Image 1 (cartoon, rainbow, N blue to C red):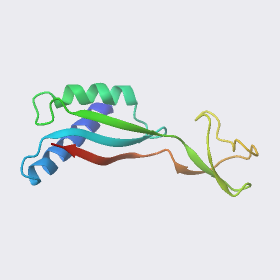
Image 2: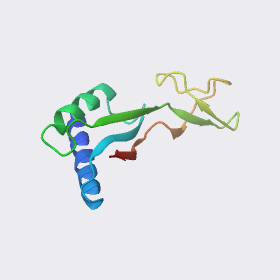
Image 3: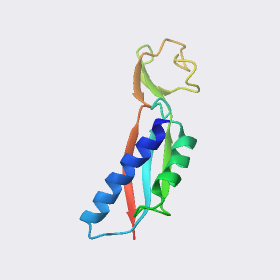
Image 4: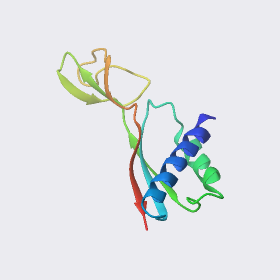
Amino acid sequence: MHELSIAMSMIEMATEKAADMGGAKVYALHLKLGQLSGVVKDALLFSWDAACEGTPLAGSQLVIEDVPVVVHCSVCRAERTLPSIQNFFCPVCNASATEIVKGKELEVTAMEII
């Protein structure tokens, strides 16, 4: 379960940043998580709670923004959101979608402190 190591890395990063800010208390960490990131959201949330115990981030929240898969259709010449990650075809013209624009994200976007 690599979600635990991801959670631990984010906790370490947030702890260091909070220390740089004079020991601020971290209330929440915000994350963009793409459907193609290879990370299971529920496993990451579970890992977050477990990994935070005994750290300065104990009791903090992990707020996850789900990012859908968006592709660029070379036929329509437009970005299209895929209705399913099981079907990589443009939902408008049904052309094969090979250029992924969004959906691979695993990005910390904000940290709420008190």
